[in-house]
Amino acid sequence: MKWILVAIIAICNTLGDVLNTAGMKRQGEVENLGPRSFAVMVKRILRNPLVLGGFAALAVSFFALLSLLSISSVSFAVPATAISYLLETLLAKYILGEDVRLRRWAAAALVACGVVLLSF
Amino acid sequence: MPVTSLKSIGGAKFREGHARKTQILVLVVIVTNVLGNVSLSHGMHQVGRIVSASPLDYLRAFANPWTILGICVLIVWMLTDLALLSRADLSFVLPVTASAYVLVAIGGHFILHDHISLARWTGIALITLGVILAEETPDRTTKGPPERLL
Picture 1 (tube, each protein chain N blue to C red):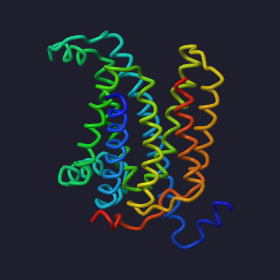
Picture 2 (spheres, chains in turn blue, brown):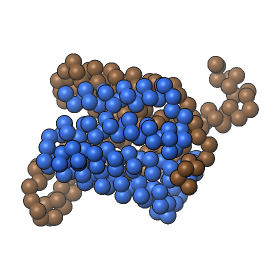
Picture 3 (cartoon, each protein chain N blue to C red):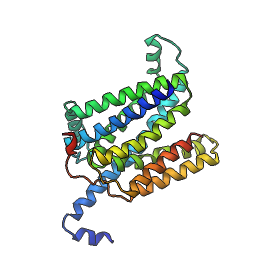
Picture 4 (cartoon, chains in turn yellow, green):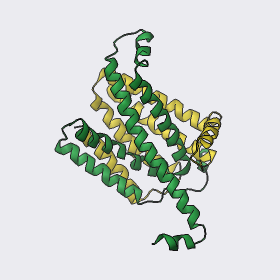
């Protein structure tokens, strides 16, 4: 059960971030950093199925995390986070079409290892 | 390359301003992530453990000022993160914003005098290295929206 929850957290977290990125890229760049341009962004998000789908996936991931924390210690949540970093980098390359080369792979792998070590 | 020569290239001034705004968003994402989570966690600890099926007990958690502050700051974090993702690659944003972990660990050490073991120092060093490596790559490598999801 624990590992099923870990898998659900990692997969939904990844799905959520990838959908949010795709949705925000389709919506277009937020050019100015003022409150008005953020208000316009929020208004567009409410009609953006990709970002709304991303929110739904992140919500599932959040509730799976709560269930995991209720049946095991925090340390069980760590592998889910570490796996997400690698999975998201993989999907960023092959689904979002980002230029992921050695440096970015190394960065993702170092962060994933670092997150695991930080939990000790 | 000195700043003056960058500006003399066509469009370079625009790119420079664009990169700076993305950097500001990165900073805001990291700071709001840390402050929001620390505040929320402080509030939830003050409320105490919730072992109840009654929704009223969960609502009680929202009466705590630290919990409310934490949630408000995390809403700002979420919106800023989305704005950042509209401008930069996911594979850039992820490792760069992971410096929030480092800030929480170092902050806990100097403010709350948390003990940091050798393993945790190693983790801090690895994440910092990952952040530096990702920072050296361009913030956006795609043009327009991803075709495969349209």
